Length: 146
Image (cartoon, rainbow, N blue to C red):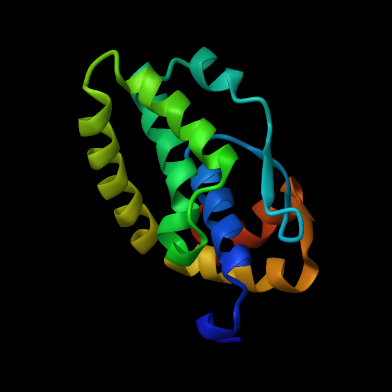
């Protein structure tokens, strides 16, 4: 299946999943039909000693990854909400505008670096429509290097 035959929504949601898992935030469920990814509560991220700036970067990359991988899809209201949380956390050290610019560049690099995983997951997601977090992790693990 080529990229041109893949659903833009499958690519968008797959990018969110890969970004979340690569930043230590588990996925509970993903659905192409609902256009959503449900994440496991990310509270453990801070409890594991990650700095607020790292959490801000992780949240922003997760929020922006869908649009970066499938530009025509834009940002959903949930993507905007997660990005606002990221900018709030990051604003303790940098201005929100500067943070957004820097985080957008990081996200573009992330999508390029993880395109094989995003596209591979999108192919399966496009066929299955809904997947559990365990299935997502298994697919990404079979494609990438955990």
